[in-house]
Image 1: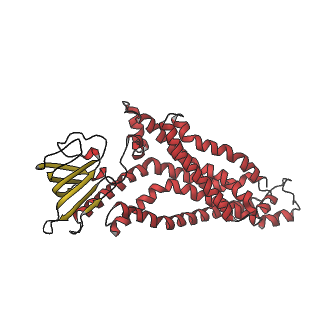
Image 2: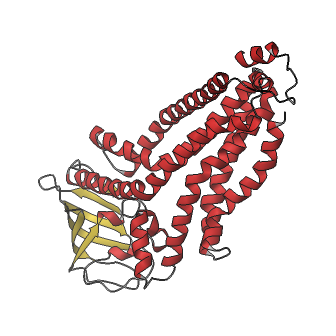
Image 3: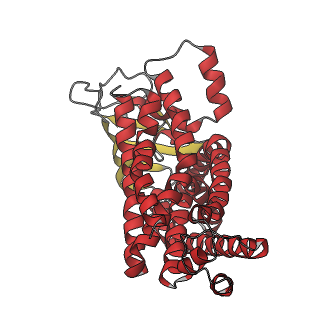
Length: 392
């Protein structure tokens, strides 16, 4: 409104005619846009937190039997920090679309143009927010997220150990992603003793002294088993074992010992193709300087560095795509503009995180191109769209 009054007072209603602009009004418009973007961003972050808490809590309960309130209170903040580099860009995109869509629908965009405010300058408030979030994301991905992923696994292992050591005496089943134990009954006087036991576990956690059973999971049957946990390891003494795999029969009187690290059965395991996700930027640089890589390790590490950089600058891409989306779709409902922006953000992550990694693994593109191709393509598409939006 102040911009429109200023324009009318100078009788310069044609936005194509340049004229001097009051610096105080310039600052006022700049701060107004910045305040609206920040407010919308905070609102979006709060909405994401409210929507995400139940889902993450349910996922935690599914992974760990009998989780307590203390575990959830410590686990949820870690999960949110690991998800922040992926959720914050979407929140900024929605904030940009909502802010610029509203000023366009309320005719404030017309008033700003009439006051002589160059259309390109409306990007500056969003650019400041985007650059700040880019730096925060680079720091999170390069130093905090790898450490937090390790802490997340440690918390799950500790919680699983507590749950196993305090199982209800009447419970006769243990089930994790990579481990399944079932028995007909347990000794009420000593619950560590399980009878008529069936155990399925991953092949790398086979019994001590047993030959290699091949790539398949190991199925073990026994008359009785003594099961306990010590320092993150499930120790199982089997008696009366009569079968492990069809190609490896064992005498019924055999005594086998299994030691299964909980880290191998809780959540996803660290594979060679994803090990870089658990390393900080400094650790990756040190590993690249050492040389003597395993197969595919160097490509994985270099791709991880480029992927983190691409995710850190995605805020700039979402800025230049969000502004024209809000301005062009101003005649419709804001829900329509937000839906379009959400679809673009989801498409970006699908192409970047899934297709990009596959192309890097298959060596279809160099590591840097596989990590950056989605950002580059999105930038090429958004530039003409931005020009069209600013001219409206």
